[in-house]
Structures are given as structure tokens and as C-alpha cells.
Image (tube, rainbow, N blue to C red; front, side):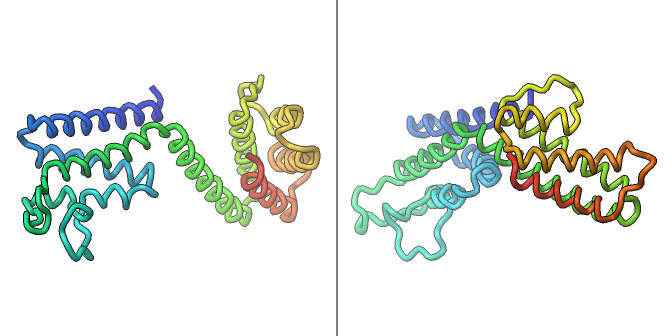
Length: 243
């Protein structure tokens, strides 16, 4: 089972746990709601923060008391009020039912959480892409530092970055590459044939492949500092412009 499948399974289990808790609470069959909800919320808020930070403040607003709140009523009552046993007076809010209001807030949280489980594949893909981009940026920084010690090593590292990025591009576009360990050229030509990249980009990548080969294979000629810097700049451009 892949990490993505594991995360999806855990999220679905957490949603199911919350839904069952809400149903039992609605039926007045949940005897330890205070404890079980707090346990669920602690796990759920971390998932929301990681996978949907844009929904975090909304998710929290159904639980946490707004420190700027000026009055307590239908629009400002939250789950934390229920857990503390706080409720507006019947004179200000006749017929106010704390349990129903807490349940409404809980259902709103579950709706937000369900929306995350429904788009988990795209959310995880975005996170993976962001982490991969950070890794590429780090490798480019390392290559520039490495170039001060060994131009060949820096160029070889950039070759690995370019190959890895082109493999990811091919995967994103559903292209099957015959070779198990394809070189830059093995990836560049199929991408051009599939019109994923245009001719100028194909030529640029071919040039970068030549520079990489100079660093990795051609022992009779030493790469120049300018050539390695051009390779680093080319790799940086590629990772930011070809997807």
C-alpha cells in the first residue's frame, strides 16, 4: 500500500469516527462526548492544517470561542461553549438548545473534513509537488556550492536533477519510457514527439544534456566554470518552466 493510500485510508477512518460520534450524540447515545470529541478534534485539526490550511480558520471557528465575541447567541455559540456548559439565557434566546447548536457546529466541521477526503488525491499531489520543488531548489544550491570544489560533481548532480524532473514530466503526461534508467536524451525526444515541449525547449534540453555528458563522461576535456554555471541555470529554468 502506497503512502498516499495509507493517508487516504486514515482520513476516511477519521471522518467515519467523527460521523459516528455525531450520530450517536444526536441520538443522545454518546455518554462521553466531551472526551471523544476532544480526541477526534485534536487529530482532525492537524489533518486540516496540513491538507487544507485555507479551511483551518473556518474549521476552528466552529469549536473555539472568538475572543472578540461581544454576545452569546445562535451566531456565536460554539462547541467549546457546550463543553464548558455555557449557554445564553432563555430571556435573550428563548428556546435555545445548546445540544442542537453544538451538533450543528460539529456537522459543519464534518462537512469541511469530508471535502478534504474527496480531494485528497489532488491535495497530496500538490503537497508532493511542493516538497519536490523544495528538494530541487536545495539541490541547485548544493550544486553551486559543490562547483567551488568540483565542477564535474556539480554538473553530474544537475544531470540527475534534470533527469528526475523530465521523468516526472513524462509521468504527469502519461508517457511510457522504454528504458528503466533513461538518460536526458531518452526523455527529451519522447516529450517532443508527444508535443509536451516545443522545439526550442527540446534544443535547450539537448544542449544541457551535452553539458551534463561533458561533466560525467568525457574525461579528455574538463568542464569550464561557465559551462557548469550554464548547466545549473538551465536546470533551474527547466524545473520552473516545464511541467
